[in-house]
Image (cartoon, rainbow, N blue to C red; front, side, top):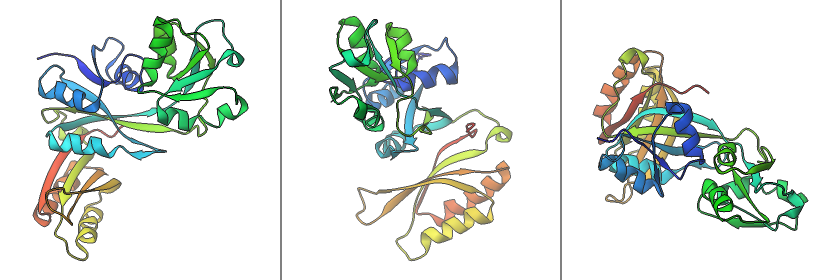
Length: 275
């Protein structure tokens, strides 16, 4: 089996930054063009684990990734919260006033649009990947074009940063999960967070009853997301994240919920990331 860590995007992307900070600077990454390709690399054992963005404090949940993890029976074994800083970068010896265009991922452009109100001459162009724009500018020597990307992209591709942290909302955090084919190997004493999926009977109060069990067992619900069950019209699957002080509290809740739900699945048991 490969020891590579799969990331969505290329070196210099936010997924790459998370891999460097989570695993260390010597991490061997496998670049994937899509989340589907990332998951497939784990299934095919071309990578041992993968880093996937799952939610953003501004944009909300990345719903398709919940479905990808679930449908491919991957296990969440860790998480990492990354503060997102967008930086404007270009080839060396250029200024903002020299630029005709700035290219980046649509979300990055949206989060930085207020900055560019002071530069109405610059056209904002959508691209598939932040770091890939930086690489293209460097490799193709693209004059008068800027990229919005992480600082690491400027370092890797030899670009100058013209402006740092140009996002409108400074407190912008993306939560990433680490996934693999097998369950995690953490001891129960180190596990204080879990990701669960359950489907309930379509009856009044069924969700409230489940939430009451979590509360009675001293679980802290940090995330709840519903997705329609495609095979059963009118039914919804609930994806939740819970934190807890002791594994025994969680174990008790788990045993009760597995009886209450029509379907109950553990997506991962892991250590809560530092905020």
